[in-house]
Length: 552
Image (spheres, rainbow, N blue to C red):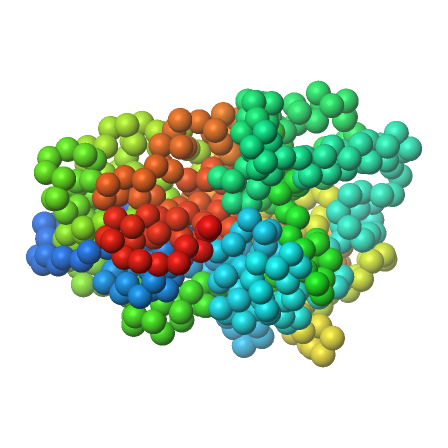
């Protein structure tokens, strides 16, 4: 589909909706805002022409980006007792893909909304959860105890399929015996990968991914797509393919036909975290999604070393750190401070780049190899909406309301219920967080749609889709806010995970380290936190600071 055709189809859908509204006069669209990442400030990178620095500061360690990776780096530095660092962030608040909003009804996520029970390899995640009081006892125990308030309340997930709700996400109604046999075969294959160890004893698929096995047949999985791998196993069940495709869209913003088979299998085989008081498929969540983890890291940093975050700061030029010139020369980073309308130059002894890697060619001078490597990364756009309702909408038959509610047919991935954790005692107003990937389009076309489509058009499409399972949702919705994220997450396309391009960013430079989830090849909290902690520990070693490793 071409860009013009797609935008025309959106306009046609909006026109049809308007015509239907004139005929039947349904309730007017609820009010709301069209929100998103700081496109206007970010586009200054393309325009260039920013003024020369009016001030220069020196700092031993500069962290660019206050998403999970950047805050994890700051958390580890502060934990080691090192406080001479600065974190700078383009947006008005920290959080990256784990930001959240709040209204009179509830907090709600603007991105990532859960954390699987951390695996034994996710030692830094467990350590953080223990510090935040969510993991009780030994953080390295085989089956720790977790705070019940963060364990997702049941029911956790359901699927709207064939006109009714069912428990779980694998379609069940009208599924043939052959397809059910394929369900079992797929589960057996994943179970085999989950328990496999490579020749060196490493898990075949670990979280963080850097600890995964390196056997040749495992690495070769990165050469083909997840859909191709399924077909090669004789798995052609349409319902199984829908389920796997949904998983790839949900975690990677990309269809199973485009996702690396290694990344697709990793999604299913790596999540083997255990708990003494919950099933292994339980997730940790909160009304605000993963923003509680962001707030926890910020509190930890401030309690140890004071406030170290500068928001509204666009890093638009990085000079140095590529091995050229004097090795003791600091890296110069120019920051555009939008609210002050001026440029600040920071001379950093060590730089941790925790912003997305697609910015590298726009920002870094020199570093030709890194710029070429960055061109290998492709990014998925996302659309997120938060709908404030006076109460839960009416239901079709079947399974009761769950935290995660998925629609078999529809452009969206479904919605989560922000107030689900309080449903036992709270039956009033609620907020539904609806997600959409644009996997049916090229990323460029998806970004064009985000840029050119009005909030009212998105709102009409979202409400029309949700009216299928919830006929009265339009009349209950008092507000509908839409959030656009043009480069929400890196796409793990075949060949990226074990490529030289990706591993180049994972290297430990003399003065420069990369600490974004992009360095792992896909966007997960565990990956971003691992990259941030790893970059911080490498930095501490360069500085000669003693510390206890969170990754050993």
